[in-house]
Amino acid sequence: MQCIRAKNPFGNIALIIDTFYARLPFVVDGINVDNQNLGLFYLPKIQVMVQKTYYKTKDYCKVKFILNLDNIESAEVLGLNGDWEKSVLLSKKKDGTFSAEVSLPKDSQHEFKYRVNNSEWINEPEADAEAPNEFGGSNSVLVL
Image (cartoon, rainbow, N blue to C red; front, side, top):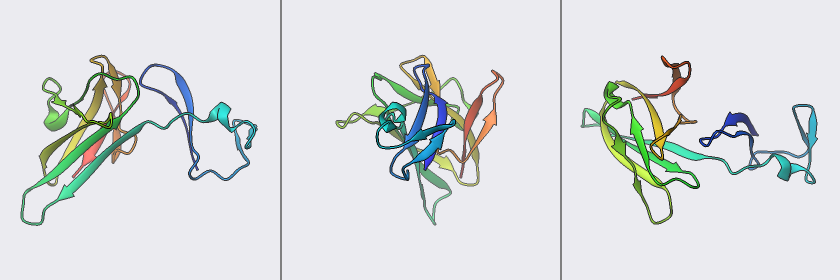
């Protein structure tokens, strides 16, 4: 079971439970969660992911960023190769997801964040690591 207390990209505090792994009943913050009150806790999980494709004969790795959030008009990745000024725009697909592919050097690390709607910053929940940033928050870390 995955149970995360998090701030969603739009500033609301949410308790996100991945019910695929949940075994009912269980306890969250001292409250018994069962079939009757699960709806009070369940919110759609933010679907964000990074897919890495390694090539034996190449000195780079292809990285695909995929972002699936409701109510967003634009999405981009910033911080790759240490560049926080130049963003990688994610293209909106027919299914509503945003994605982009980039080639990054093997044996490298990259701090990054997603920016949605030109104003909201979010981290990659499945990142390899997190690193503190100068603004008192954290950045996602991609290790290749």
